[in-house]
Length: 622
Picture 1 (cartoon, rainbow, N blue to C red):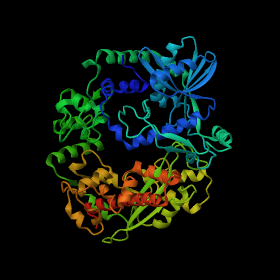
Picture 2: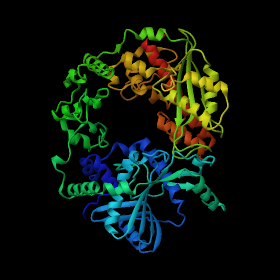
Picture 3: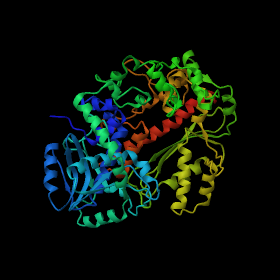
Picture 4: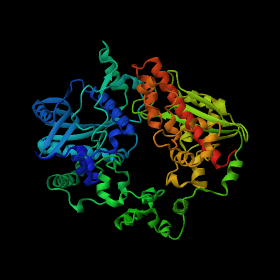
């Protein structure tokens, strides 16, 4: 049997033809156990379920591919029909259409995506190219099978210009565990070969309610989905789409040629780079160049050196088989003889990595001494999802559900901790901000890592206008603490990520400055920190090899064995988002499970702010 080219195959091959070969050979991918990708997929299924409810007479096509093709062909003989997941194959090209409307010889291809768009923006189609290409490939296949039909195409997506009037809309849908494996590809997870989950069942809260029809009508009128017409763009793409498809089919049928692909700087993010797996596509492409102790991919913003027009420096090095960090020419990091701020960081990384030594700028001590006490080390946990949690919200509008703050009142004082987490049924953002305002007030220095906290508080300030909240004290506090270049506000926040870029480097950070890279680099190489009383609770070693654990790997401590077996550890932002969603809407949780998830959220956020204190202590703050 000849291999088929699905729309997921098409999208993947468009990024790199060799990936198509690896996918068809069932090479494992980094997406197979990627928690964030799984969350995206589940959000896609929920939006998909909501979309199908707008077509009450639709017929879902299920079963093995050959059966789906036959069932689709039979149903397409009807004068009018709406099909979900209909299957079409022309030659070796195979597509599944999310929703297909047929009225006589009029066909409407509707692609459902959890990605949002804003219908108020005139250039929305330009920002949706990836998704329009997906529809364009479906159009190519369907139009070959039905050449005498008029076909139009639309995307059906959450529309960020819409505010829902439905309270707790996200709670109208829940994810149930799959009862059986799903044969079709998980299209929200491109190149996922062996997913750690099957296609879930999306349960509508009012499915068996006598008033189900009413709730469906409310969903249609007051929900958040909107259409984006893309027919004209899809038709313009057809010559390119068909040419690409033919090329990919040649590769599937005749094998890939060296001229069909080349290794490049884009390989850094290859999903087929799975170090622990027996079959690693990245290694097969790169051979001996795959891994170096100090690789050019480690360089801070290395991929941006050069330009698309003139060529990128990393691509030039890769073509010359020079992939070691120390094989780079420092002069190439400059532009017209000028050393930019970014190039300064790159040159610093090269020199200090080669010397294998950490670096603190001479100015760092003065910066720390200049901070006004009390010092407030602050971290937020937030949620953004396609389905709004509360009435009046837009899709993907931010919810601030938790903060942690470690405060050092005066030089030499031990840090004290305060925290807040959302527990009521009300929209949390304004009480979130009020609680923080009450805690830190107008004095001292609030510190954040990167700009997330500033962005969150600016968002809440804007939401006060949208939700018509009148609170002069809160508004003035938000105006005072947040930075806004456009409005000329300097704000009070000090960004420790910016301090890192300007004043600190450790070779084990490589080219990264996120807190989850900086903390282990410092913690694992400076044992004196483990003896500091308020840091010592995070001092632990791996029982197998005796290596010092990353503090984030210690978050499972304090849990009972039953807790550990029941709930995964919250140790990252994605896990925190999922945990908050479960607390809000997972009715299957027992009170003990709910309490355990809340405890984990608090411990995770608390470690984020303690990590900032640890880093500042190492920098010289006492």
